[in-house]
Image 1 (tube, rainbow, N blue to C red):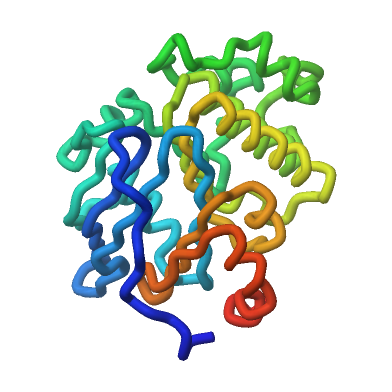
Image 2: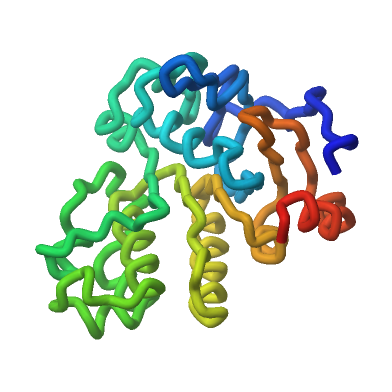
Length: 248
């Protein structure tokens, strides 16, 4: 696939809503991890970021969230420039990050984990009642310590915790990795429900089949650069090629 990669990546029409990343670069010491990355995720849209391990996907999410120190470029949310804001102010502005290790607190119960982060947008925030209706397993285990849940249950807890804040953009880092098919299906349903509510979703995902069922557009990251931008039709047509390139 490498011979087909191009750095002349077309972008969708400019939007004033949702997430806009322009010219984002990041470094670990003298090693450059991201190179002039630009992407957009409109309100109510699901977009995936795919690439091999080490391509820079998690670094991109961390940089958008303000958790990576050595960064240049612009991050906007609904037109507001967040580039100079620390991570906690980006979260209060409406960015919600579900990290790949889920970040569940062992000393807190399920319900305490859900209630820990502050609500940033009351109109968008999921109530505990809605969370428990949508994630029945969390309702059943609400008094249990968060880390006594299975991996799939912890993933649902991590997603639900961000939804309770009322985030306008959901950054998901490999949410289906290592999970049973029934849990993957539940996460797919939640992502579709969230996007239907107008939340923009940027999904880092190596499961190409899963990505194809939830997203309308796909960015391919290679060596820290966005080298392909594919719509759903082309993504599906080139699925075999993508799987081979990703080593899957």
